[in-house]
Length: 80
Image (spheres, helix red, strand yellow):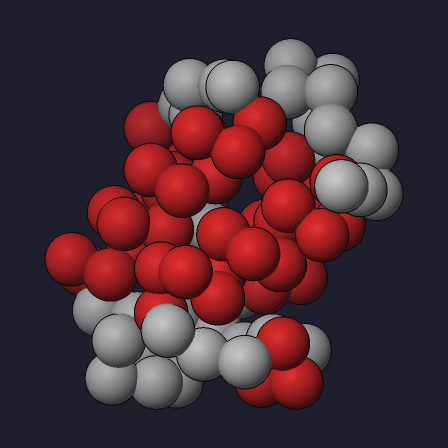
């Protein structure tokens, strides 16, 4: 599976949403993306890419698009 596929699947699993809901999705746009859902998303992303996210990056993860920028950082090495 591609990295984008893994990334999308993490969001879909964490929030129980479909792929067509991902683009433009932001923190608290949907009921499932609250503080608890946020930590579920982080766990899904860490498992999918075998990484440990930095606390600042976890806090900064505020949208679907922002998450791609964060994971593209050199320290995580995820290419989309």
